Amino acid sequence: MENQTYNGWTNFETWQAALWMGDDYGVLDSITGDDGKIRYSDVVALLDCMTYEQAAEGILEGGLLGDILTHGEFKGDTGLILALWHGLVNIQEIVDNHNED
Image (cartoon, rainbow, N blue to C red; front, side, top):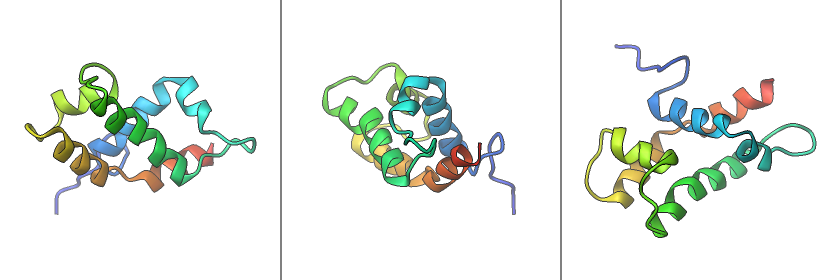
């Protein structure tokens, strides 16, 4: 079986989500608790905000959403693309990686 990891992450989508979250200190800081840790549910909510809410507002270029829609494997229906992308992101890996630091 071929190794499907990407830059040390489970897959491209997990790496992509972690990269976008980590590139903006304010975004990641907004979900970091007083103990310096992030929670699974907060990462889900943040990714939803960065994707579904932007799509609903018609913001389809730039940021995480634009990157998914222009560099992802799926073309066509935005809702389907986002649902598939979200399903591939290993959120627990992102949480564990952040909380190990």
